[in-house]
Length: 334
Ligand code: PLP
Ligand code: COI
Image 1 (tube, protein in one colour):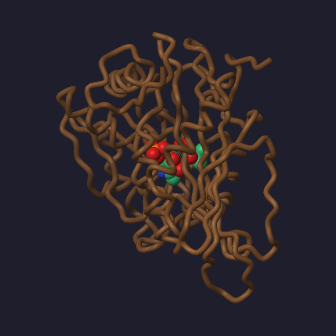
Image 2: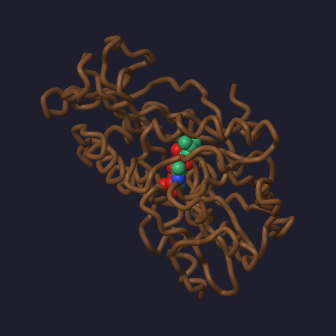
Image 3: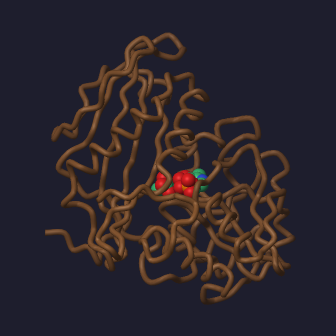
């Protein structure tokens, strides 16, 4: 029996996962299996050379009892870009969709009830399975969709979290893999994020070239409010967030000016609100960003500020079916 209300962002074993294999550029049809283990060659390119990409998206039980899958086609497109970035055969968009739908259909009991704050998270994963010792890409791949009910990434009610500027680790290079959702980006940031967590904070990464501009957080984009403007970094090293894209649309509708450009750290003195945003993070407002090496603290609001709170509500209202989905972001499953 799952206690939906106390779920955090942790794995809960579903009944089924969904798998599909690809050999020499040809994808097989996805199937559901209760077996959560892969039989993988020890020299598979995903293990030896990190040839892997992943995604994250959610299904919501709405106020009307219907299930809504949020913008899965955008995740499919992004995974195809990540696949190309790591020289893998992309998962066709329709196959991606069939796998998500099958994962949902086979795990209906894991869709959290409306009102609990929990959702069904899907973790699509693409790995290279060709055995290889010589350095180079493989030509065999496995696509897996792992569903898991989850609670909030930052547990507790909608609240502020403190972030710290990392000045020790470059997460992603300007022409590197930061724009792709690949495991290596996360593994390379563990040293920084674990050090931040040990102090009770989360990390903000700076651009790797000048160490001056905000790139993003370890698992979320950065957004901020300055006057009547919604600002978010423009950088070739950050993941194009689907949540951020949605929030930019909502921000425009709410009369904000939306700007994507380089944001120097010092400019944060002029920001009234700041947050991390992403599928897992939704909007996670920041009360402060500490930059201890420079002896500087950027202070925002101790409670979530009015502009980001309004955007947070607008997004959640669409996802939970409490308002009209004008942009057709949700696919409704009856
Ligand atoms: N940036 C990084 C590094 C992430 O891991 C994520 C999470 O997916 C995001 C941004 C937010 O992207 P999205 O809103 O598409 O989940
Ligand atoms: C997401 O927001 O979906 C993510 O994948 C972020 C993180 C948990 C890796």
